[in-house]
Length: 311
Length: 300
Image (cartoon, rainbow over all chains, first blue to last red; front, side, top):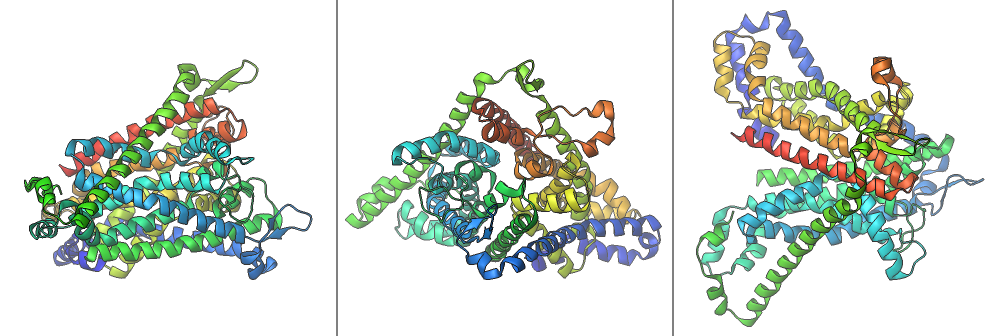
């Protein structure tokens, strides 16, 4: 996408202009100073990524080396403050994967159908009222979702399933599903709106009903945008910490729907404030694992978005 | 967008000639669309209604403005509101020049495709990193390596990295909308490149920069993980005005989101937590309105 858009970009053509103009711009010392300053500003994003990556690797590796990669990734017990501490993060990895998958399974169908509703079915006035509220939902701080989850969902689960504590994987999944809804709705809606009118008109003219057109023509045409929405949702869900910290219970059990669980993110969040020594280093190792997950997701997201723009 | 309705076809008439299977498909799919829509709307109404119902009764002018005091039995989030403002101001002072500068470099100066692609990839990456990783980095880099400790300034620096992509992207969008003729006109009249940017390009893209600011403020207000670990959760008033800038480098304190966490998880004072939630939702509402106003101006 970059390569295609650049030849028409302002920089390119103006660059030619100033070259043609020759020395008028080049000889002024202020011009070259500003050029350097802007270059540094531009480069700083790259520098930040490098710093984050290097710091995470440097501070994450020692603990992994000490614990052993296999013990760390596949150990089933996390007991960081025990006399003989154990640092196995398999429960957290699995919890993060199950939690994210659960949120996607609940959130994506509802979000997609809502996007179809807003983009195609809803009367213009209804959509104009609902859309800003969905945006508001996207802007509400995650901690507020955690609070509502803690006060509404957790007691509900405790009473419905007769468990000792309602803080569970299930509660976390529902909170995550609600939190990823707004981004799934708005990204899918944008994709659906971008489907060329002619596709839908052709489908209708061939005798398909409106509903058939939405699901068999519009949705497939918008599929890479919708895929991007799903990946974005995965990224959001796997990276969320504060909201699920309030509803998940934070005990590092192997995941099951109604038991208290600890995610990769909450694994860091719970112990970061008071940890020291190897325990602290192990938290940075968790951070490194989480970072690798996120980087994979980002790369996948970029592929989908690029494909979308290239048509 | 709404082409189908505008075609004027009578859909009900069209459905009548269909086979039973297609009829069932149409009915079923239409039904689940409406079920999903009703579900989402009901959820929205419930969420907002519940938060307002729980939070509004305790919300008072006194709660918003005073500092909490155990002795006088007063609860208040005055310090948290002030801290939020301080963190926002400190972050924006650093991130605005950086982000706008980066966007200017990308649209006005850069000619190397690979470098542009690398910077844009780095920006995307920063945007995708979850806040708990930023919290880790903030603790590692700013609080420990640079020995800033748990202070507002350490939190602000961490947030700079976090909101940088937002500022770069919105500024870039609006720089791209500045007509090429403006640039050519300015250069043709003999101005240098920096002069052109300062007098022609930046003034015409100010709306985008404002939008970037508003979105950045939104993220800062909503952030809790980073601030919890880099700034701390003290609920006391920071006396900047008496002690001056020096205290800014040594002060720690909770912002609104962190105050909500403290009330809910540390003190189990849920009514007050909901009151803070109401304040946060009102701020979010104002930010969304402001952003869409600025965005609309941008389109014009």
